[in-house]
Length: 298
Ligand SMILES: [Zn+2]
Ligand SMILES: [Zn+2]
Image (cartoon, rainbow, N blue to C red):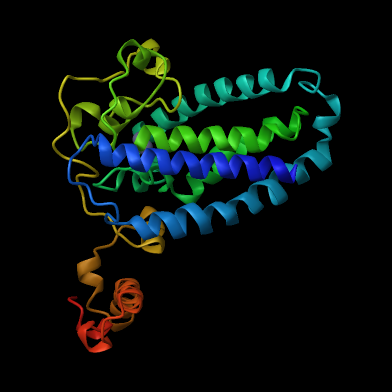
């Protein structure tokens, strides 16, 4: 099992390198910086810390106790199927579910709160898909991986499915000018998903597909004009900090108003100050050249 994870990690890192190179060579939007706004939040907090913590909660505290209690996996519902059939079965069924849940999140004001973070970035690239509210991941990955375990799938299906998710997720958000022709009716990619991240009203309720584009075409939500979006992200202000993004989903607040409070101001300035210090350490600039937190604009 361990070597499967080594192989899937190696494939994933190779894929990241390939996509980054393709983004530089064939950009969908020219001039997008590699270290764009929110890069470190998406990489460190969403991709590494949140994913790691939620993986433990989802598997060790939800799915495995469920299986121990009900012993569903002992029914071996899919155990006899070839591994590739199991993978295909779970990829298609989960993609169908995620189309409808995603569509529901865009229609329900309450569930929109669990999805707006994903739309908050104005510079969408290979890493942007990782920005997903913790509750959104908790719901979706529990619904994704519970059937795999409970129906008695081969243990390798979990890392294979997780790899397919990551590879496809990186692809659909990549800033690559893909023109896949008729394939776009089947395979979802940046052509339609980058439009889904646009701040254009005509696409607020369109392009909900993740892996297979045909859900959008079948259920009448496909949007693919011949031009590119002009505006990106949300039409309202959204916090840039990971924890404030989660607080904002529960209770709306105005960051500029809260900056009157010294404690909030200190927290608000902490992250940019840390990055400045880190950058200073890396570039070996003299500390005097770096503004300290108290000097940062409120
Ligand atoms: Zn969406
Ligand atoms: Zn997205």
